[in-house]
Image (cartoon, rainbow, N blue to C red; front, side, top):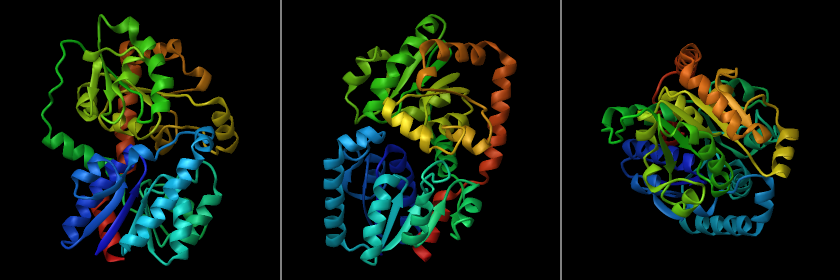
Length: 363
């Protein structure tokens, strides 16, 4: 069987790599192509386009890069026509993937959507597109099955793949991050726009803690190191492609909203969530949003168990105020850790990648 996995972001590359490994384990004759990153490539996927050319953050940034996005769409069509895969798996990345899905449906390809768009958060019209274009929707969040029922759509719930990935990491890793001081981890995101906007604020926030704590920044190899250095990071503070080792060793984390918030919680690292965007993009998102929180931790739990500092509230002073509570108020810190234990119970059992692969191979 020939498969094609379309992943547009760093988190999708992670989930796509685990899914690919699980497919290979079930379908011994599988050939997998895809758009992705190093993780998918290392898992045996034949990468036809790297994710570094795909991800754009915010409404304004999408408009600015519209020409490039349309070019990507044209290239995708040409690739699919040439390869003729039996099954196509879309991972998250809804702005691009739902447009792709419409074209795929017209051309009679079998379409799976793994890690569904967060339509319950905003743009609920996308739920109708899922029903119309997707053959097999696969969910990783416990409340989505009930949500999609409102749109007469049956989805397969498999659990969250991060549970598997983190469990595997904990079993196999050797911690090579050593410090004689407690570690404060900074996770500024995987998009250049995010890093440029948020990392200087994070660095300013942690400056007063440098004597008592070790500061480390989770960097990525496909980001120019000068972007980190220009934000005030020193060479000995930057750790490249070692986020899980860093989280495993950290006492507290400052995290850009996204998958990393859930990763920190699953590593039992108390955190503060930060997010800032172009003001026009932010205002549009605020008008469209139907949710009270932006971090996966709070969304899944249903309450604000970690502090979210968004837009004008995302300042060095406010980050520092929250860090003080996490670092020095032991009752506050323990309460957050207790919430993380409850969060893990909500997420349920592990095995998401295997379950998703079984659905894809057998349906």
